[in-house]
Length: 347
Ligand code: FES
Image (cartoon, rainbow, N blue to C red; front, top):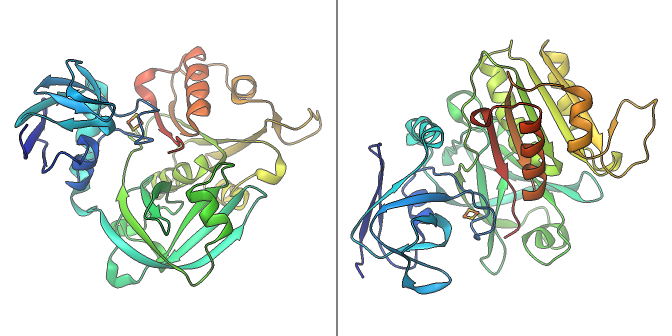
């Protein structure tokens, strides 16, 4: 087993080094500032799947090197000095586009002070940090940071802000929406323990939302719960560049107490003539006279759209939500090459 491996991505100039056996191929790529598709980093969502063309890997679950040709980068360690991985063309195009822009988005470790941690719904807290301008944090729309607890366990959370000019943070406050998970973990730490004034470790920014927006197609942006964070970041940023973009934001939440960022949705609608939004409530009784839709995405989306063949879609939320929305969009004739998603798997 070699200590240092060079991994190349087929049909690109992208390469990265894995310096030890304890770093997964995915982490090695991210640490080298190469953005590759991923989601949960725990082997659950399948987003980091790639073809192994040359070389061998071992996986987190097996010491022996695998003969499998389809690997999960978040579960694989390098076993060969030289390795090549490959992606299907549609994914490869996005990887190349995103990595062209990546130069100034170098992930770093930050110690930031909490300046807000308030409940915005019964299940969600808005956590915000002051980022001193001298830290020069730059990020891409839809990026995430890893937030660490006192035991040095991390979880990824999408940045709600849209980057300002030159990809800087506007007004020095970075904001996240944290949904409380019943199980113990980072979200409980943030909900129950973190107070204003605390200093937390964060690492990033990283980008796992692989998208490539074209200005000539309408955007349907579907958010499940706090999936609204990367959706707002991407949509706002796209609108800064092209105020005529045709965008509908479709938010799915349990009930009206769980609606997130409604003020942002109204502000966007007021500011841009081609922006609209719909909110579907999955656990409320049907009310014919309501401004809301009722039911899960796979029943409510078709009340608004009969055909999505000309749309590009952004979907963000929990794994099952993204899968259901994706499947339903395909049933409504969406082209799979125009569907981009971010899965918030628990890890
Ligand atoms: S399976 Fe690897 S990122 Fe989810």
